[in-house]
Image (cartoon, rainbow, N blue to C red; front, top):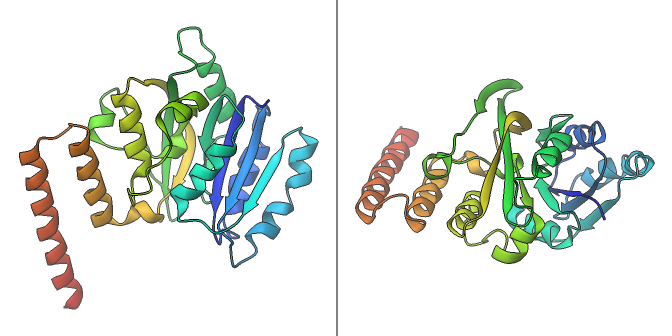
Length: 252
């Protein structure tokens, strides 16, 4: 069995999937499997992926490709999680990529004697890109869970955590990854920090919509008790006003 399972959801990703795949082929750690869940792309995504299968096999890395309709990116991720055989599961989107030593560093951290192998998730630093330039480097202390979000691509979750607490809630449109992390932490899952850059995230996905993002963000913070009922109502009101102002500006 592989030590790590890596999942990539894809849909019409022919222009960016090469970078994601090459980052995995360049890993200093090869004891992983690669699972690709494609939502029946209408471009050449699958053809691009198939070009690399022999290179993975040469390194002893198994590749599984599922090509079928899904209910969105989180549904695709859930499908991949259900197929994963590794002790630790990571997810990298088709326009994002790992640092070349990411899997080695994550596995070494997870393997430390003080880490609960059945009840932990390891997270590192994520570098954010916009228009091929570094936009931000997201560092988070222990309190980030109640203050901000760190996308799933910087997280590696023990398989038994998914088995115990479920995967992504498809009722959460934008931030199902943040909802999942909050759910796990509320159940006592341990966050294990790795203070190095492990992943690169390209702005422009579904979570880039300002109003949808903050609508889900505030809802989740309220759901898990990070903000009071009163504060939640205030934030929803402010967001609604901003939305109305934005509509007026667009019409002008």
